[in-house]
Length: 70
Image (tube, helix red, strand yellow):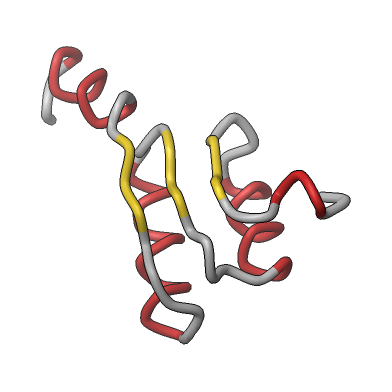
């Protein structure tokens, strides 16, 4: 639908999501499902990060991921 070039651009995107509420969780999941390559979510909790990683295991998620056993 978007083409290879545009999908590669989305895959290379780096996006930050600030917040830990329902809206932030929805935004993080939507970005992961759309193929964004890197999401920085400093306020995300372990539950949100685990869910996103289950959707897209190769995504890069910033937060305290290194402190979590995901």
